[in-house]
Length: 87
Length: 87
Image 1: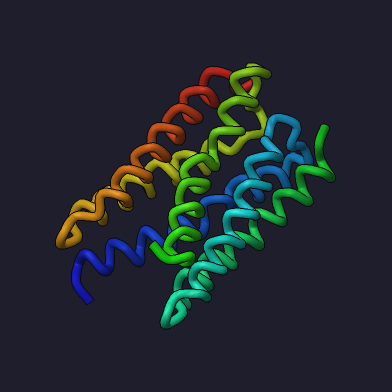
Image 2: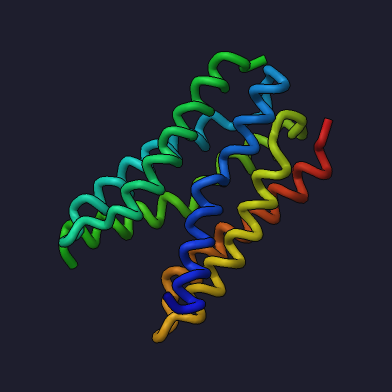
């Protein structure tokens, strides 16, 4: 693995965790009034597109499928939290 | 361009716009109390990593560089809005 590969995998790992601080903050504060629901709906739909893209590639790209599945779960979690704590 | 290519480019275009609804909402409401600053700092650092990765590839991947530059600008914009309207 080259340094450039390592940078790419590190960047991918961090991308996967991007939404986690918002989930933790909303969970702790029980408030998501100023958080954009549209942002997380767009993110969720977008993750489904990326997963489909990764699955349709020949051969399928499991790194794309796996990382975007994690982000999809986080996006759906934030949508639930937003709807629950929209005050 | 195949259908799979088209799906990938469409997904990339939507990814680029993910943060825009949050920027618009925060700009309108002048409040970002429940928005996670950490999320956008992670996103900004992460975009710099992706831009570096795209630039270091042989040949450089200008789609990666351009799309992540747009997301970087949006992340930095949200950091400024969060610090300004953290009430």
